[in-house]
Image 1: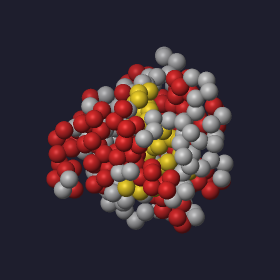
Image 2 (image 1 turned 120 degrees about the vertical axis):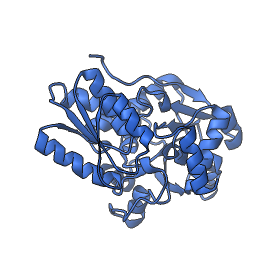
Image 3 (image 1 turned 90 degrees about the vertical axis):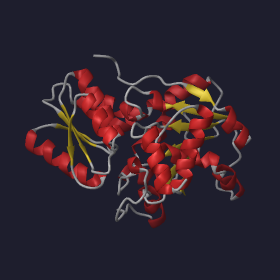
Length: 322
């Protein structure tokens, strides 16, 4: 079995984004992972620790966690059952099946699928692979930051890290990684879309809350409740986390612009973070005094995503009239 299942992904300078921002922008290209997103870092690490002798794994997913789990399970020779909500695109179901996974559809949103996955783990003796809420996942995701530190070289530190938040697994991993390399003073800009904003809602309420529904088209951000650790980080004061929202239209525009300028297609969940640059959110945060002037490059985590293709992009454009 390999030491790990994820790749050391490219760290690329974006000339167009740097020009727009007036400051250097680096892109951590997690879209180039074998499963299409950063999720394979944490899920690969967790499965190596917990599922070596498993009779099978079960994972609930809007797409990307399931694809990572299915890929890892196939490489480990372990059966995988992936439970997805009915909102998952057919292309995701097909890709899961192509990886050899058994796919079950349960409920409208991820939370429903997760309840079914937990039931299957209990009744069928399967190893449950959570998509975002587990310390082993965060350990795996933290490797992102150590790779970036090695790529930038000694003495270079980001001015800020920009990422998307769904359930909070990537956020927790990035903060752990910042701690590991001594960058805890680097602010994190955490982006969500309106209608898939469980982290922002928790920050505003001062407690973990559960959204009534997921109304955003960024379905892979679609957890109705953020994980407790992510919320605790937002309240602890150890690291500066700036929680912001963009509209679905802004996220989709960012996906289209990124495709045009960088020749890479990502899903809307990833577009939420890219929109912070394209919609000029970064300078607004600086004007408001919420984000200091960048003393180093802006680091954008291009989390990727496999629930999009040209046809799906066209459907989204029609839905959102972009």
